[in-house]
Amino acid sequence: MYVLPARAFPKAQDRLLPLEAPFLRYLEREGFFLPRLEAEENPAYRQVIPYALVRYAGQYLLMRRKRAGGEARLFDRFTLGVGGHINPEDAGENPVETALGRELYEEVGLQRYTARAVGLIVLDDTPVSRVHAGVVFVVEAEEEPAVVERDKLEGRLCGLEEIWAVYEGLEDWSKRVADWLRDVG
Image (cartoon, rainbow, N blue to C red; front, side):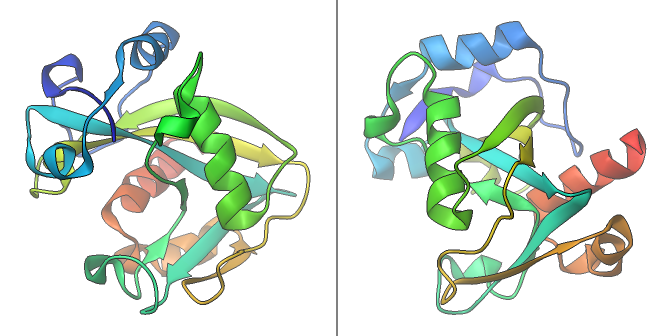
């Protein structure tokens, strides 16, 4: 897993933190890979996770995790994020953006888009959150996104009012992104 020392990140806060371009470059330049077991259990490191809020035609992609896929703690939770771990094959000049592109294609079939990094998610309220940090992107899709792994996820495009209607069912990172959306209008 692609990591940085936990001390490299800003102090954990219950909101989307600003992301400055120099810090994104630092993440891409100074990150390194650890075996998954060590990365998952050692809070001295945080795994860097690209996490994309996908917009298309003025609406946002909202997905719900089914019981068939992923971690039990996320079953039936809604998510606004497309993303995942940075793998060794993503290594290179821009591993965060390379992994973002791979995840967008694997999860929702996107190949044509523009992405803008908008913030960091750094939490410490659970053992899982202590070993992960999200790099949040707003992705403007040039083609309609569609969930690829339909056995694991279902999704639809929706407006902000639909996001607010399921707010309590959003996973933690998606709540931080939704709060940010509310604040930026």
